[in-house]
Figure (cartoon, one colour):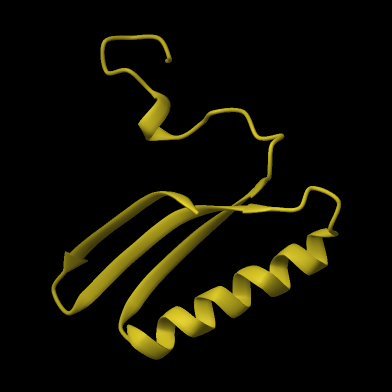
Length: 75
């Protein structure tokens, strides 16, 4: 897991992060994993809005706001 971001808005907690998964698994398998992770988080944070971005482990290029420079260009 990387690029974890959390924030609160009223009664809601927003949780988003990237998770590295085996690049050889199917989209259906990746979906099952992400849904299970979301289910477990909702047990602890029932009012959470959760966004999980699956990345193919070792094959994903850098992306997202953490890799963007506000001065133009990317890191």
